[in-house]
Amino acid sequence: MKLCMIGTGYVGLVSGVCFSDLGNTVYCVDNNKDKINSLNSGKVPIYEPGLEEILKKNYKQKRLIFTTDLKYAVTNSDIIFICVGTPTKKNGYSADLKYVFQVAKELKKSIKKYKIIITKSTVPVATGDKIENILRNLKKRKLVDVVSNPEFLREGEAIRDFIYPDRVVIGTDSKKAIKILKSLYLPIIKKTSRFFNTSRRGAELIKYASNAFLATKISYINELANLCEKTGVDVKDVSLGMGLDQRIGDRFLRAGPAYGGSCFPKDTRAIVDTANSFKTNLSIIKRVIKSNNERKLLLTKKIEKLLNNKIKNKNITFLGVTFKPNTDDMREASSLFMIPRLHRKGANIKYFDPSGKKINFNKLKNVKFCNNISSACLKSDLIIIHTEWNEFKLLNFKKIVKKNKFVIYDMRNIYSVQKMKKDKIDYFSIGR
Image 1 (spheres, rainbow, N blue to C red):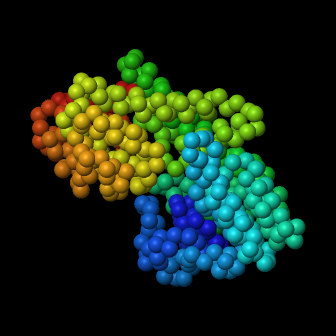
Image 2: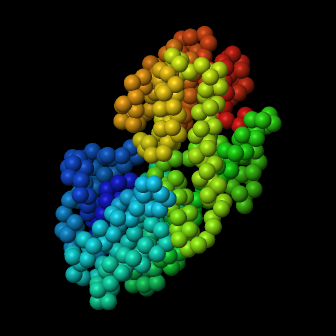
Image 3: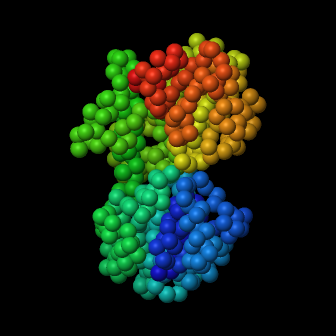
């Protein structure tokens, strides 16, 4: 099939590359000329394991076309995916849909024969209705079906999630669109996953409801971790004991920093905003948002306490600054709150992240990126394991710190408390 992905951000690029690898011809469109030129030269603008290799293979075989010409891509495609950003509006909770509607208005000018228009972007309930209203003349002529097909790709695991999805959700009542999309997804829905058809509004809400529930699990175990620390219980044991109950499951029951990234923060805010517009109170999700925001401060105060609240001129190391491993995504990572606060209090901060230096800290005078773990940890007073990259899991801290007295704050519970005690290292973790 011939597909058009509008937007070459995380969702659009990963989906486009993976669809091309299934044998489809995919036109990836973006209005950022520099990004398109970079993609045409084989450079991937995001950090996602395995993506660059698949992109280069399919580009070489001419199944991937990167262009800024929307009309050209739409004209040559049968199915059009809207994959533009839907960030939170400034000073509010609602999703900013201006890019989605801009695309819909552009599509109105270019469609001359039947197309399936799919919202792959995460959008609030009834967004599809508004897109359909923009395209109402095309709808009357039966030239378009507007469908919701939310993505469920985890950053760092996106390719695997695409090929082996838990479910493929299609929101439409068009039998023609369902038949075509089932054929499109056939190579992956064979692999024991589920093809689920619902209403368009149902599909839109499923995405938000899923992310809000997962965010709730994270906040729930983080709050329990606070209790575990007070009562001398290991939160890992609690997570395991809970997770063995199939009704609960063990995924997303790992205590750590506040959740971040491109989805959970904005999607929890957006579903609350949607509920407010329908005069419905989502009190649990509101509390999850509040709890998550409070956690950033709570863990930062714990850092300060570990240094006896004497932060000035202390050498602090962050191992990992992204919100999770195997991604370069800094959106709403806890480090964006912690590092500036510690910097304001006079700390000297070094950090190492396998995904590279971050522009977020460029203006902070005493915050330095190091090219390797050893230089980041050398002579450090406090080492914070912020992100659980594999590179951090088997370190000989005494050898790399080269200092008798230092503290480790393991926010991901990577290391054994007993092992650290045996090595006579001042070690602190989460909920243990």
